[in-house]
Length: 111
Length: 113
Image (cartoon, rainbow over all chains, first blue to last red; front, side, top):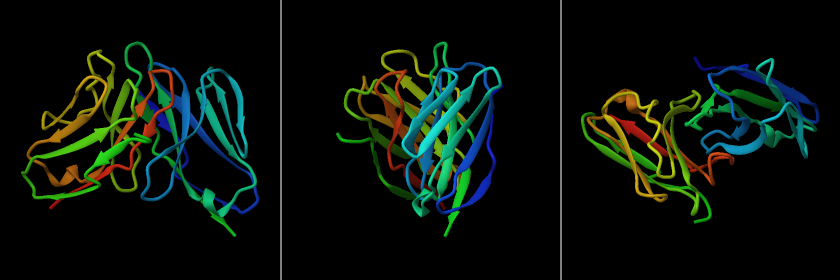
């Protein structure tokens, strides 16, 4: 089966660091993706991991452990504009490369 | 075009009517995806097209839903005999190939009354 779990909501303070966790159990794996979605808008691509380890892109970093079926997104120096939903997605393999999304984590950044 | 384009942006239809939603992917992108997002929910996979391969239709919720794609261009998602539970935002995404990140359009907000 396919199962991707993320916390429903998180709250953090402007300037702080927040870590959003994602655990997955999927029948195939060809990469783990993080997307940001502001209310009423389309998801936008943030980061991608296919190998174990940490990928850093400015204020955003993403980590993957394939053996543990675990990823996290780390947001540093939080800004008010970071208030959004963060979607974890696993891309399949073996003939279908569809993305399976978690339900998303709503992050509220407080002043 | 510069991004994934979807039309219409909003559609209100009466229960029982058919609707057709359109997606123009980024030029040159071989992969195209349709997702459904109900209010406050995550993205639900519907269908995936990759080049000339047979599409993955495993996410279509019923035989009222169908989708087509002409070559590596426009795709249409058709919902027949719409029901109130079909009300959602329908998102289309495309990627250069199976190994690249997907880019989403702004979606079509469908309301069935």
